[in-house]
Length: 72
Image (cartoon, rainbow, N blue to C red; front, side, top):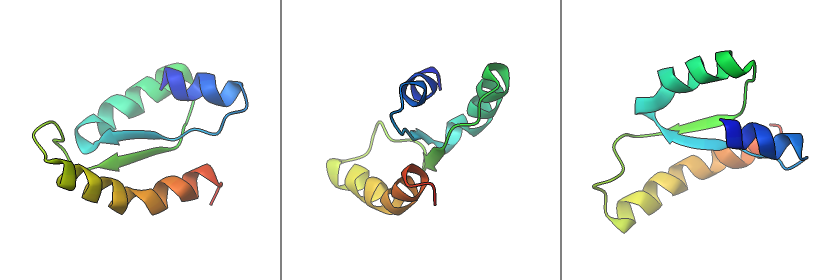
């Protein structure tokens, strides 16, 4: 969240991508920072997935990421 905030303060559009395991942690950290960044959550876990599975997760999240970056 700090990185997203820092990028946006520099005028760089940013979207966080995290797994669903971190929904609550993101909410708490955002409240602490007083900041509400765009975050897209993908299925958890990711560490044991194959490249094809990771690519499929990214493909599924791409439209939401692009929409968040474009303000839509």
